[in-house]
Image (cartoon, rainbow, N blue to C red; front, top):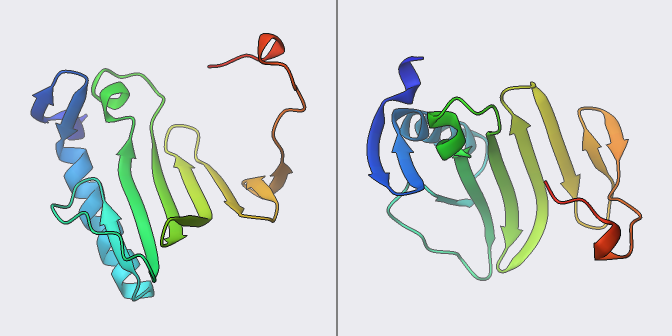
Length: 128
């Protein structure tokens, strides 16, 4: 894949051409659709506007996995007002699934409603 070109290797934190290219595409789209502040892992400016809406973007969440051919990576996007989350969207690039939810509302995988596990004891839970 052409996108696996490594630009930086900081141990387990890697920067790939795909990070920067996806970041550019996502920033263009967000700026076209919204006037909100945008924080992105790939941007130099990391200022959270405390009294305003902020998009928080990780254009290639799991770039370490991506760089090694492990199919666990996604695009992560959240909308916050100050320090409070409002909504989140995850696009699973390998499975072509979109997860989204709004605080106080339902969450979905594609168009099907999903929910968290009803397991109450950590000893009964599975962490992957």
